[in-house]
Length: 96
Image (cartoon, rainbow, N blue to C red; front, top):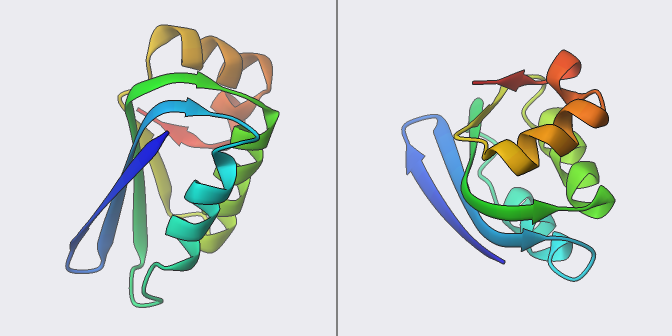
């Protein structure tokens, strides 16, 4: 998994590629921890994400908390969306 963080004013975008699983979830956790507190909006771009495990889902919950609910998940591939839907994330997170 790889993450790329882009900051535009108070908006942070984290693009994730590859597999977000037990082995790579700490990398996303680190990227989230390194965000400047002045970022008031968080976007997670999953366009290049191939797979997400329960450890990855947990990091999305962490991202939601860190953003104080101001999280948007974008460009979700169908296979990943199926997992998010099964976990009920489509009802609790803002996914476009």
